[in-house]
Image (cartoon, one colour):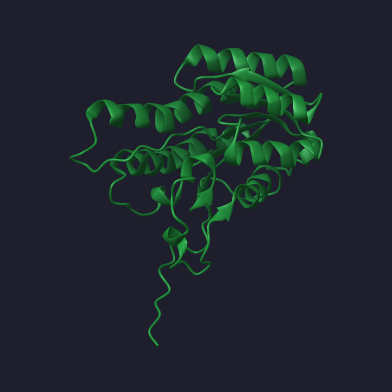
Length: 248
């Protein structure tokens, strides 16, 4: 599967108004990519598209609504002359143990983080096929590689997304479509701004990551990882490797 130069990317980003999505949009726009930024945070999403200029557009997209996907994909294809990449990045975090999380809260997290990603893959695949192939990057988490107490719904959704990623990679390979999962660890974004610095203190790299650091990995996955599909790319400061213990 060929390398796609950033200037040749025709990309749809979900959860693009802030955090990792916005950092990735800025990085790729600076290198000439055309992109449809989507979110449900309309003011910030439109402001970002205005900031990035003529190659960026904003559209509201609720990832749980199939009609929103279809409208955004159709607009992107018309605007860019095709679509060859999806950054499936939208997601939410909800606190709650297995017994403390309500069924409604659990379903909401699964609906956005997992079913929303499924709808994106399903609805965008024909557009990527029309373009001759492309790439889908799904934002999972280190919570898709290991468990975390008190995050029952979130962990479930991110492990599910990891499995969906592998199934989609196999199903879409004949259409020249790569499918990859991105697994950030503790990253400073609006989603994690209430977490203390000490949460990353025992990692091999003892700090929170920055959204720009994840954006650089996302660019590599979208543009250069031509011999990779169905696999995981981790940006976590070594968090899933283990803890550094002070034994002296």
